[in-house]
Length: 138
Image 1 (cartoon, rainbow, N blue to C red):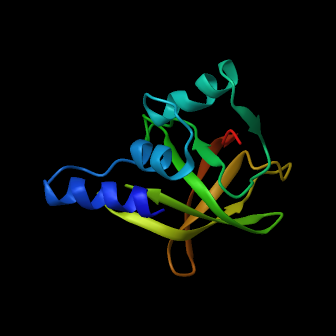
Image 2: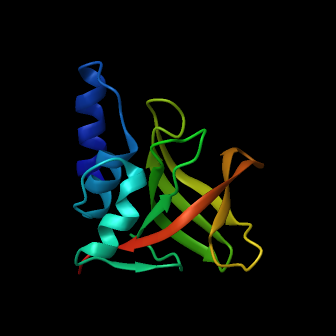
């Protein structure tokens, strides 16, 4: 976390944008390059294990959508129960880091394929499709 936050501070001090991909890569150690929307397929083709169950330290991959064409990635910081986790991520709120943000599974099959993110305390926003979770190499 210290390294990831230090990199954010360096970027912000230069007036540069903070993006979800480098933040997730620095925080999780998952060394995948490219837009967030490409991470799932890249992970499946490389040495990373993937899952549809969240684990602390795993990278949750949001699928690309019309409103989020490059996808999004966030790192699971805590599993609260089978249907609620906390994540750390960057640029959910423009150019900011959000720590401990709640995410709930709202998928019909309870398989973490669709989620809602708590963008403000007690307020869960739109439904987003999720590709799954990339597990960091041990």
